[in-house]
Structure formats: C-alpha cells, structure tokens
Image 1: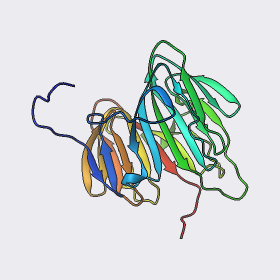
Image 2: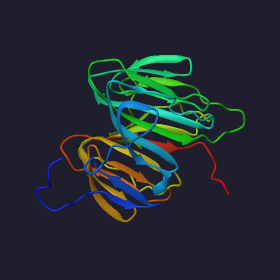
Image 3: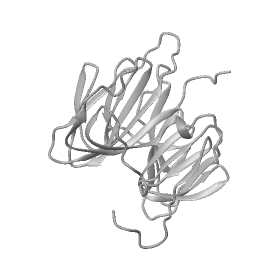
Amino acid sequence: MPYPKGFLESRAIIKPGVYTVIPPEGRVINSIPGFEGCQLTIIASPKHGASFVQYVGTVTPGGKTTALFVDDADVESFLFVMDGEGELDVSVGDQSEKLKAGGYSFAPPENGIEFENTSSSPVRILLYKQRYVPLNDLKPWIVFSNINEVPENIYDEMENVFLRDLLPNDLAFDMNMHTLKFNPDACHSFVETHVQEHGAYMLGGQGMYLLGEDWLQVKKEDFIWFGPFTQQGAYTTGREPFWYIYSKDMNRDAEI
C-alpha cells in the first residue's frame, strides 16, 4: 500500500458498549485458523461489546474452510455471499448447496458450516456466529436460501421502505437476519431505542445514521454495530436506495 497523500485519518468510530462504525479503509486481514485462501477481517466481537462475532472478506478460487465453522454445540452460525462472480459449495450438517451472490445459509447449534470456492472467480462473504439461547425443547433447523427469493415487505406502513426476514419467524430461533432498504427520501418511522443489538453491513447507497446522540454519514461497505438501548434511526441521502443486512436477537426474555 503506498504512502498516504495527506494526513493519516479514518472515519472509524469506536465507542465500546455503545456503537462502532468501521469503514472498509483501515481494515486489516486477520490470520484465522480453519480457513485457506480466505482474506477475512473480524469486524465485531465481544472485545468492543458485541455478543457475537462477525467477519467480512473474500474467498479466492480454491479457498475453503479446513475445519468446521463453528465446531461448538452451543453456537449457531450464518454465511451470506455478498457479491462476486464465483460460487461456493456450502455444507451444513447433511445438506449441501451451491451459493452465488445473494445466497445464504444458517447452521443451528451442533452443526456448523463448511465451504469451498470451486469456481474460477472470487466471492465476498459475511460470516457470523453467536451463542444460542435455548427455549424449552425447541430446536432451530438448517436454512439455505437467496435474498432474491425472499419477498420484501413494506416496513411500518411506509411505501418506500422494505424489509426482508431471512430466517423463519419461529420461537425456535433466537435471532434473525434481515435486509432493510430505504428508497430515496425514505427514513425510519421513529428513533428506535430497544434491548436488541444489531450488526449492520451497508450493501448499497448512503445515508445519515443516528447512533446514540451522534448523526453520522455512512455508505456502502461500512459496518455498524450498536449495543442495547443505543438510539438509532436512519434516512437516505443519495439518489439510490440505501440498504443493509443486519442481525437481530429476538424471541427471548432478558436475563436477570
């Protein structure tokens, strides 16, 4: 990487326990056991307050897992193919599928994800893992799909904001993954303050995002994490839709 043309500077903001904004500039590739031919960066972890771990990166042709992601009977995991011309052969338990851009898989506890890029082009992925919170004898199940096959629903009765639920809305699941899309001139219907935390990766466009008491400009490729009860809301500022994929803990009571 060449010398900078000006001052060393960054748009990254880290407020442990409250929120983080991590732009693509300044990310470093982490050396993570269990992966080969994968350039991955850890963008969320308990070290800054998240209850989960999230990664972003590229799987080059021939890149693959060399160990199960995740090999822990109490941890669930999720893989999303953001973009790229290649495809991944993905296995979860006894199920396998080829995933292209927009494809995703969910591995419940006692499973895990294995993948290999058997194509001649790279793909970019998100990976996610968190500890599962049991409820009675309910058990979540393996999910394979593509966001392009999931219908978008109008969000909060606003005709220019659209939500996708990527995982089943079932009490067996203690989390979900969603996409939220704001068309130009759209916004949240109110400033949200809730117990759930989110990890949100910007997939397109740009907008202003309220995090705590700070209004911040964010755009495609930025990652945001915000903790429980951090005020949040957004509106689009560009000429194209502003949208992102985000995690949400749900269907469980708060512990005491």
